[in-house]
Amino acid sequence: MHERLLARFRAVAPAVDFCSLRFVHHHSEYLSVRQNILQPVSTTDDVGAMITVVDRGGMGYAATSDLTETGLRRAAARARAWARYGAGRSVTDFSQIAFPRVDGTYRSTVVIPWGSIPLADKIGLLRTAAERLKSDERIVDWEASLWHTDSEVLYVTADGVRVHQSFSFLVPMLSATANAGVETQTRTFAGRGYCRQGGLEILDHTGFHEAAPRIAAEAIQLLLAPNCPSGRMEVLLAPDQMILQLHESIGHPLELDRILGDERNYAGTSFVTPEMFGTYRYGSDLLNVTFDPTLPAEFASYGFDDEGLPARREYLIRHGILLRGLGGVVSQARSGLPGVANARATSWNRPPIDRMANLNLEPGESSFPAMVAAVERGIYMQTNVSWSIDDSRNKFQFGCEWGQLIENGELTTVVKNPNYRGISATFWRNLTMVGDRQTYEMLGSPYCGKGEPNQVIRVGHAAPACLFTDVEVFGGE
Image (cartoon, rainbow, N blue to C red; front, side, top):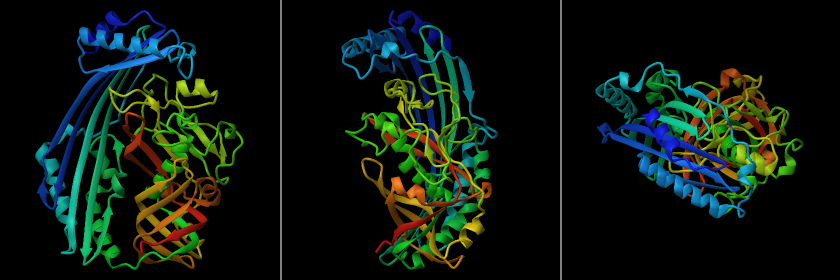
């Protein structure tokens, strides 16, 4: 099919400054057992292609699910028309941008393919997990699910570039909700945070098979726990909350298209300005953040972005100093700032825009016991449950599923409804200890929204546990 598609594209590609085709095929299957009842199995296929044209300095694109020569010809004509409409009126002269000219391939590493295990066995696995979640009569809702997606992306240009990438994604999830009177508490399997690239071996690597009893017991424990106290104190954040902190208060503010103003009508702007790169102290000396799509199992790994730029590991923040933004080829040309290979599209009917991929906080040297022992009065928080941040990605307020007081260097009382708030521009400067490799976890999210029309895309995040001082904490009352 690829050869036929390539031949059709070359037959219809107009004589312009630049022309590319990006073919995408997503195949997904979602399995769920809720309250010990198998839910309808959901299977989806999504196939199509987008043609992008640069002509006379303007850029245009058009998508189609008609992959015949006629369908591609119509899309190419529409893309060329849009390029000409935009010529002289665009934010930049696109004909001056050197789009990548590199061939290559990428494939997710899979040990146990999704299709190698019969459907009945996968459903049986979920039934077992669901039964173990219902360990108490106070558990009123419970669910075990698996969401698997295979994706294939072919990117070609009229002048001969060819990039082929194949991905396999798995999102495991467990959830238990406990109720007593007017009080309800939910505990989850990192809130879908254990999403990765690979096959069913991910369930072993993340401890999915053993997690259900713990999740159910912790839901009951939260139900009986006192509310989180309020006040300024030290906060120790687990990796499954650190990824949300990293995502919202570092990832989004560093997107170059947002800094350039492209997102202000929808997703907002950024407190970061172009002048900050190279000198601005984003956090303490312990803050080291990398963009790294090259890690084999992380959720948003790839070999090339959706404009064909080869993926490389880059430091965005090193020893607390802001070095580089999250911007692809176009944003780099517009801003004159260094960026990364992160022009990404959620599917064939959306254009690539600047997106996070694998955004990771590098581990430090502190063990978890050492971080706890360093706290006189504070709280340990796990698993994000709510988030709110202003339209410049500066002032934020986040809530977690699980809290546990730290008193005189020891973990003590479990508390419910823990929340904290801060300001991005100062919060990271109060980072005082960064966990070592033993605290480091590879996580992510299937749901990062941005763009008009909206694009919901996969992101990967890895982080250790981290300790912050002088944080405003409050409970749910």
